[in-house]
Amino acid sequence: MWGGRFAAGPSAIMREINASIPFDKALWRQDIAASKAHVAMLGAQGIVAAEDVKAILDGLDRVAAEYEASGVPENWDLEDIHMTTESRLAELIGPAAGRLHTARSRNDQVATDFRLWVRDAIDQADAGLEALQKALVARAGEHADSIMPGFTHLQTAQPVTLGHHLMAYYEMAARDRSRFADARLRLNRCPLGSAALAGTGFPIDRFMTAQALGFDAPTANSLDAVSDRDFALDYLMAAAQCALHLSRLAEEFIIWASQPFGFAALPDSLSTGSSIMPQKKNPDAAELVRGHAGRVIGCLTALMVTMKGLPLAYSKDMQDDKPPVFEAAGLLALSIAAMTGMVAETTFRTERMRAAAELGYATATDLADWLVRQANIPFREAHHITGAAVKLAESRGVALDKLPLADLQAIDARIDERVYAALSVEASVAARASHGGTAPDEVRKRVAEARRALGLE
Ligand code: ARG
Image (cartoon, rainbow, N blue to C red; front, side, top):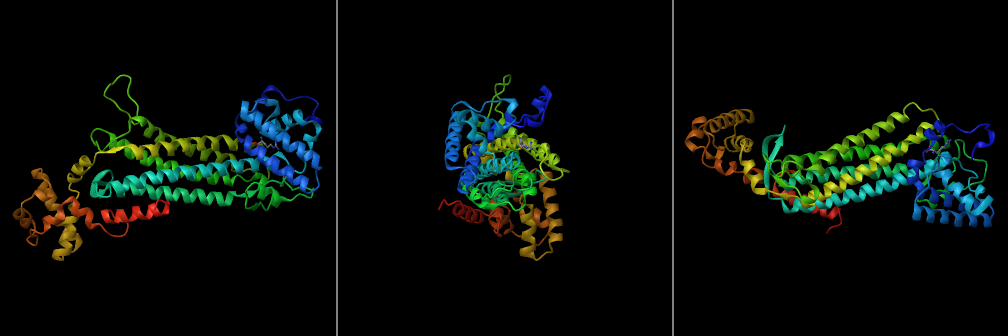
C-alpha cells in the first residue's frame, strides 16, 4: 500500500512490531461503516463516480459478510484492519477499490473507527450498570427493614439497614453512568475528513459523514482530531472509577460471606470449591472483580503514559491506544455482570446481621443523643457519660440495654427508664430519618425514587 518510495521491504522485526491487525481487527464493523459513509459522501459530492461508489459499497458488504462468516484474516504485511479491508476490497472489485481512500488517511480513519467502538463500549457499560442498579434496588426494597451493623474503620459503629447499605452502591452506579454519559457527549464528534493532519483539498462534506455515523458534528480542528485520544481516556477514567466501585462492592460480599461474619451465602453459580478442602465455597468471582479493578486502572495508566508528551499530530505510539481500551472494556463488562448476579442471587442472613448489630455497643450514640434530648446535657458530656456506661456493660459482658436502671442512674442520675426505648437497634435506625439517613422509611423513599428513575414504575 505504501511501497512506492521504498527499495527494500521491511525486516521481519519491522513487520511484527508494526502490525496492529492482531488486535485492531476488533474494529472491523466500525471500519466498514465509516468507509461506507465516506464513499457515499464522495459520491454525493461528485468526487467519485456513481458506479464506482456502488461497486465499493457492494464490495464492502461482501467483505463484511466474509469477516462475519470466517473472521478477519491476519496478514502482518497488511498491517492493520484498514489496509486488510481495502486490500480484500481490491481483490473483490478491482481498481475501483483504489478510489475509496480519496480525501482520507488512516489517521482520520482510525480515529473515527475507534470513537465508534468506544461509543458502543460506553453504551454497553451504561446498559450493564442499569441492570446492576435494578438488582440493587430490588434487594434494597426487600431489606429496607433488615438491620445490620454499620461500620467505620470496619468496627461496629451504628446500626444501619441492609437496604440503606445496598442503596449506597446504587448511588455509585448512578455517578458512574453519569460519567459515561459525559464522556459520550465529548466523544461524539466525527474526525473523518481531517485526513492525515491538515484536512483535504477535495470538496468533501464532513457534516454528511458525521451525521451518517451518528455523530453530533464534525470535529473542529484537523490536527487535534487525528491526534486526540481524550475520548478513550475519558472512557478509561470512567471505567476505572466504575471498576473501583465494583471492587468495593465485591469486597463487601467477600467479607459478608466469610464464616466469622456469616452475613451472606453467595450464589453457587458465582462461587467455586477447593480441590483439597471439601468444606470450602470460595468467593472467586467477587475476588476477581476486586482484582480486575487493578487491571482496569492499569489500562488507564498505560494510555495516559502513551499519550503524554506526544507532539501534534499522529504518532505511531498511538497505535498502542487500542489494547488497553479493549482489555478494560472486556474486564468491566464481566465485572458488572458478575456483581449484578451476586447482588440478585445472594442469600442475606438477616438474623446473623441483626445479632451482630446487637453486639459492639452499636447504640451507644443513641444513649448519648437521648441524654442530649431528654436531659439537655451538652453532647460532649453525654458522650462521656455514655462511655462510662459502655465500660460498665463491657465489664459485665452485657449489651447496653441489659444494664439495670439503678446502674445507669449511678453513672448519671438524670437517666430514667424511658432510655430503654432508645437503646434497641430498631429504635436506633428508625431515629435516623434525616434526609438520606438509614431509617427504613427513608430507605423506602429512596428506593421508590430510584425505581421511578429506572422507569420501573
Ligand atoms: N494502525 C494504525 C493505528 O492504529 C492506523 C493509523 C496509521 N497511520 C499511519 N500514519 N501510519 O494507529
